[in-house]
Length: 156
Image (cartoon, rainbow, N blue to C red; front, side, top):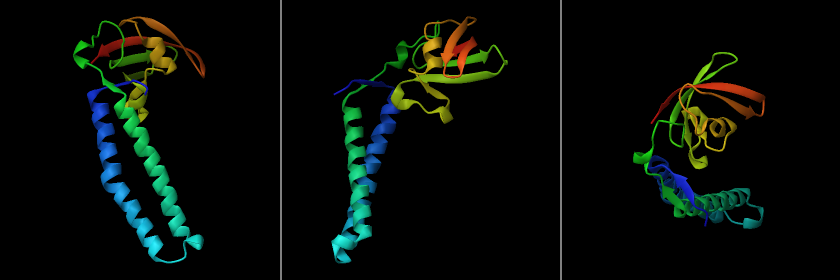
């Protein structure tokens, strides 16, 4: 079992997702299988095959979530500082080349969601920012090439 670090919020989201899969989606799939079975010959029943495939995918997702949750360690957010960039900081940076400002929260891999402005600690940008302070300009080796970012703010 791998240890996975996550915030309390991330842990709560995973628990809610597991609850939804087990208590809402699983019964739906079981019902779909039952209905398809009631229609007769299973050897030529595409509905039954689709429901069984959906069940397999669902059970795999449930097992994956249970494993993730079992290995979860909650990060103590009260110990997070803002003197230098670290996990769970909200960092505002400016691209030195074009002046574009961006704000990202650096999170664990399991909580990354670019639409919410959350980037994984394993991304090139996050790796490049870690350990640096406000006012510093850091070089980041991204897939698009070398980029420079100035750290404008570090918050929690």
